[in-house]
Image (cartoon, rainbow, N blue to C red; front, side):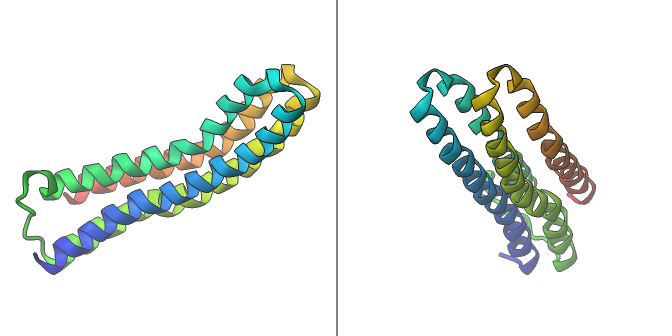
Length: 156
């Protein structure tokens, strides 16, 4: 396996791993807040479950980005491409927008949505506002995902 292929695989691992870690943390943060609310108001389980899923999307974006890298370099065919060091480094760099923004935004989104749990505890009709606050953070994860996709397409 060439040094370039190793760098590309590192990019795939970062694209999958960091947003996955961020999503796990974000979903956990929301889950902790949700459990407190559901203890007092069990009928809010459906609302809180919906909110808990929101920070998990960055992990999905990272997984898709990592799969795209792996497909492009031949991981699933068993014939990993002989990439130059420059090509591997370019793929590694292409993975960084979703790796970094996905990781950090999932945690920020978890904190934002967890704060929204307090809002719906007092005003359940404001679920849409809580979702909107979370969606504002999501915007930057989507932009990073798009950047990674375009960069991968440009270098692969």
